[in-house]
Every structure is written in structure tokens, then in C-alpha cells.
Amino acid sequence: MQWLMDCLGRILRAVADFVDRCLPRYEPAVWNSNPTVQKWNNCYNYACDTQTNTYAQPGHAHGILLNWPVDAACDPVTRGAIADGLTPVNCDEGCGCSECHHQVALVIAPGFDYHWYRKDRDGRWSHKLADSPATNLDNANQLITDPRTANRGPYTVFCGCFCVNKSQVVIS
Amino acid sequence: MDTNDEVLVVTVGVFSGRPNPTFELVGPAARQWSELLASVVGVQAADPPPPTRLGEYYGFQVEPRADAIARQSTERLVRVFRGVVSVYEKRHAGHWRDTAELELFLAQRAVDAGHAELLRKVAAPFKLEPSRR
Image (cartoon, rainbow over all chains, first blue to last red; front, side):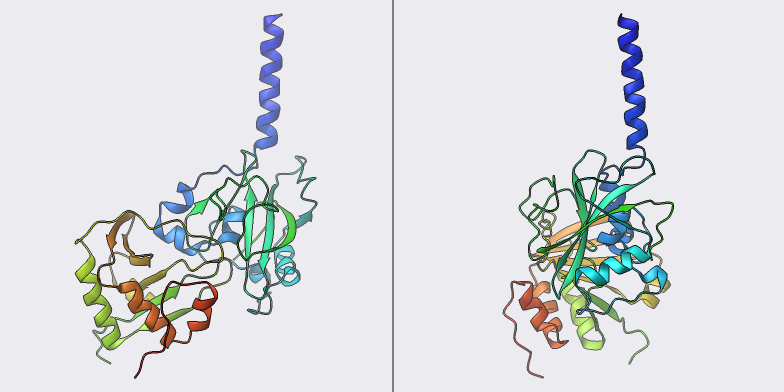
């Protein structure tokens, strides 16, 4: 029977690896160890797991120029993100495993700014505040298990979750 | 302006997603900055600055304007936050105590550049009055 258990264990691990293959790992050094990378990649870059070194803005790659501060609201930023290829999704349902997706979340400080979180392979969420280091802690220094309940300071409006398919999303 | 004068770009750290406001230090202000910085670097080592918090002021960045960067062999970036001056050259970082009040110097220039209301909004820890010219 041991051989059967070993075989089942290997199959389960392979299935788990397959499901996880598109989820970003929480590896802050990838974003923090090079000052140029840290400086020129913001929360949107980090959420999309794409280093453009251009301080990417939602929609910019597709001709949408957000107007600050009036566009610091869910609808304009969401429109930009959708134009870039992000797909809205129910946060509790997640992105599934049929395509190579990972999940991100958008929040807003009304009339001030926007911010993004991403869900990592370990099941927790992380983020990158502008040109600051990437972190998996919220404003209360707690690990982020759900961005809806994390301490987000003045970013009080939770707009929703999105799926990112890196092969289809283009940001700049 | 003297062609040898360095033009420095200062970025005010307040936003996460949208671009942060910037202003320039030129002429006497740039020279004063350089003198203050030289008086701090290498004097009193400090721990790295505290973590940044969403929605709060998170310091200033100072760097040569892009054309100056292109002329230099190494890119140099200075961050000033909560009494710590961090100097980045390529991948090396050094942290020094802000004994010359560089942060206050930059905050005053930010106010003069019209960013007082923004700094108040993000609870920047300074007394903020426009300087008399």
C-alpha cells in the first residue's frame, strides 16, 4: 500500500504545482534590491507582477490618461485597468485555474489616490507603496489575509478584485 | 545659470499609485543642499528608516535631473525620511542620521513650491509656513 500512497502524494503535488504555476511568489527582494527597480515600479506594476520601470498607470498603455485628483475614484481607475486587460472578478470566487491568472484588488482614497494589492502563492496578499519597498504587511504591521479587512489608512473604498493574465495584460 | 550648476529633482512621497509631485532645486538652493548633504554623509550611521505607511507622508527623494544622470557614471539617489538620510549608489545603500535637518530644508522648499496643503493632508511632521523671500 505504501507505493500507492507515494504515487497519490506525487500526483497531488503535481496538481498543486500546476494550479500554483501562475501565482506570483512573495519575493520582495526582486522589487527592493535594485534602487532603480524600486523607484520606477509602483503598486500597479507590483500587482500586475510586471516591471516596466515606467511607474505604470492604469489605462496608459491603451490611451487612457487619468486626470488627478478627480479620477481618484473606482470607476475611472477600473476603466483603465480593464483597458489594460485586467478582468473583474468576485473576490471570494477568485480567478480559478483554467487560465494562467493571479488575483489583484483595487482600493481608493477618494479624491486623493488609488492603490493595488495582489494575492501571492502563499495565499496572503502583498503590495508596494509607490517607490517604497514591497511588503506583505498592512498599516497595522499585520500580515494581509484579505485586503477588504486590512488596515489601509485613508484608502477606505474597496473597489473590487480583478484577474491578471500576464500574457494578455499590457501596462505602461 | 552657470552650466556647471547642478539641477536636482525632489520628489515628495505622498501617493502610492498616481505620480508624486516634484519640484527642482537650482542655483543656491542646490548648492545649499549639497553642502548640507556632505555634512551628514559618513558622520553618524543610522538604522534604515521606518517602514512607509499607506496614505501617510513617506519622505523626499533627491536626484540629479535626468540629463544629469545621463552624464554621470553612477546614478545617485538620496532619500530623506524621519530623520534618516539614505544614499543609494547603484545597489549600495548607506543610512545616516539627519543631523543637518535636511528633511526640514526640503519640507520648506516643498512648501515654497506650493505643496503645503498636500503635506498637511498626509500628516507630514513639520511646521509648515512659506519662507519670507
